[in-house]
Length: 113
Image (tube, rainbow, N blue to C red; front, top):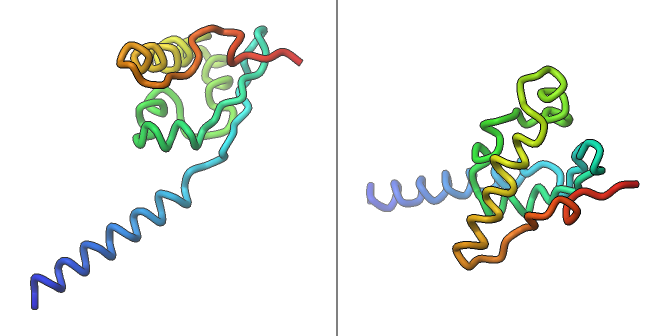
């Protein structure tokens, strides 16, 4: 009887976690300031679904709109730091592993006008 109660409790907690995680995904698509090369349309929820751990990216910058541009302006991030240390590095690793990967060429993400 106690074992069943523990199992039910664990299932309820897991369900509650799943619902709260699903509700806190942020925007499906985020437009990032891409500097002189033009804006970047970033598929945020697609990355969340694939990576699962927000801190893989957000260890460099907080979960706030405009955080990357603000930190670059304040000198706390170098220009291209996020792109080089996170985006391209991850995309190349995925490609080497034989998985479908995102672009590694600037013009594939940055779009002017």
